[in-house]
Length: 85
Image (tube, rainbow, N blue to C red; front, top):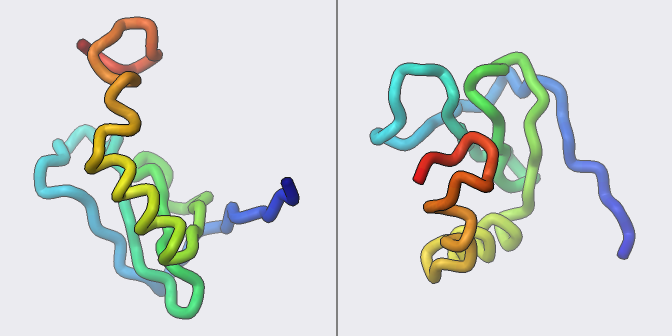
């Protein structure tokens, strides 16, 4: 499988957003549309970068997998660092 680098430095010209359910602790996943590239993803604790940029198709597939429960096995266990059961 060919590797395609997708990490970018801070993207100052995009509008970041996060879930309304996110707290104010500063440890949220934020998303932003990136013109002609797709969707950027970053950790709100590090607003100056880096960000991962995914194509619209990649993000659509990822969100569909989340909705169908493909990652549910990662939740509800203390074996996963930083995830409370």
